[in-house]
Image (cartoon, rainbow, N blue to C red):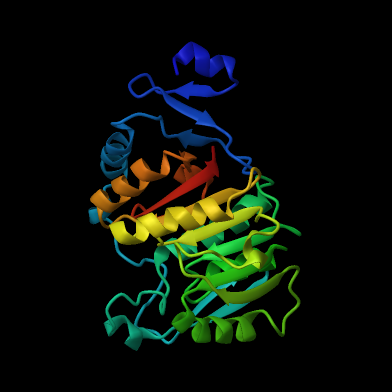
Length: 278
C-alpha cells in the first residue's frame, strides 16, 4: 500500500523513515501502528521494537513480586487480592501460577482505555486465554464485561479460588467465570456462540509449538467483530517474530504505543498488540 493509497483510506502516515501507518483496529478507539504485510515485515517489527524499547536494559517484573503469595492491586475502585503459587514455578512449563508484568500492563491498559473513552467493555462478551491467576479477566469484569476466563484443567483451581476471593462477594458491574480451554482443540460452544466481542491474552506467546495452537484457537474464537488484545514480555525475539509472521496470514495486527497505556503502568519489557481477523 503506497502513502497515497493509505491516505485515501483515511489512515495517517507518520515518520519519514518508516512511514508508519496509524489506524483504528476493531473496536478499539485509539490509533495503533499497523504492521505492514510482506515477507520482511515481522523481522522489521522485531528490529524496531528492540531498538526503541531496549527491553534487556529494563527492570524485569517492575509491578509484581513472584516470591509473594499475594499480589494486591487497586483497579476500578476495588482492591484486588491475587493469590499466587510461587512454588509451582519450579515445575517445567508452569508459568500461570504467578503474575507477570504483562498482565498488570494489559489490565491497567483496559481500565485506562475505558476511562479515556477509547474502549467499551460494559455488557460485552470477553474471553481471556491463559488466565493464570486471573487479574486481567477480573479487571475486565470490574469494567462491566461478561468474562470467561480460560486455562488448562490443572490451572483452574487457583483461578477459581481467585474468582471467589475477588469477584463473587463484591459489587461488580460484570461477571467472571472460569472454564478449561486447551489451545488447538475445539472450544466449547459457550466460548464461540456467539463469538466474543473481545479476546484477551497476556504472556501467551512463549514457544513455537504454543504459537501454532494459539493461532488455531484465536481463529476459532474470532468473529467479524472480535477485537483481540495481546500483551507480552519481550524475552525471545525469535519466538515473537515467528508469531507475528504466522499471525499476519489471517489477522491484521497493530502495536499500541505506550502513550496510550495507563501512565503509571508502562514497561519497556512489554509489547501490546491489537488484532482483528481478516
